[in-house]
Image (cartoon, rainbow, N blue to C red; front, top):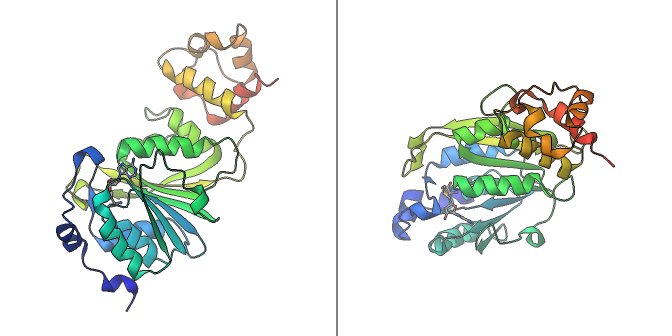
Length: 279
Ligand code: SAM
């Protein structure tokens, strides 16, 4: 019998520890361990990896990650009420689970992790997007993580994998696809969660590329993309006017028509435009 079989069902864990879902913490729990094991498998081979899990809650995904063979899991959870439930999982997997009771936006987990590191999380959507942007924009590349397997509201997942010409295409797609491979690996209906959220969800798996897909300075690219999509309905010669007096020439030399709008421009073209600003 594996260690997971000795732990009580998640519904009992929630009842025993009084973990009524709190809206303010974005608590929509996954209670089906077959489903959490499936999500854990989407994170790849974990046997040689430390896994950083954000927002374990009562520990459904944590149990999935450990049952699927993660070498170690470091879990950061803001809700103190979840600590006893997570301690029970730690007891079933001695030495393999460390839990930090804190806010993932403030705790720096790196000193507690040994590479290779993969990240897995079912997080409140606002926290998830903020952490994703941080994980995609470190000062140095490659980043500390090999892959990110993250649950998002379906619309956000679609923004991450969007292609030029679609409504969902924007800063998040460009940030993600410049230095990572990003794909949606699972769709989940509201009923998969307890309580069910109002929206559909999807799991996105991102794998860090060893180098950016096209050369560009990260700060310049980020500035141009932000300016271009801040006024996404405008022609680029207008939205990027403040970037340089000769912006039309720069756009043309990057292979972009000055009359085009941001959502028609590919990642490769944005990188070419960023390079015209290189010193
Ligand atoms: N992973 C669990 C699951 O799949 O059942 C719980 C998912 S629930 C959507 C989000 C979890 O993130 C909750 O347990 C919540 O308390 C926690 N959380 C919310 N904000 C957080 C933050 N800033 N840092 C760490 N955990 C947070």
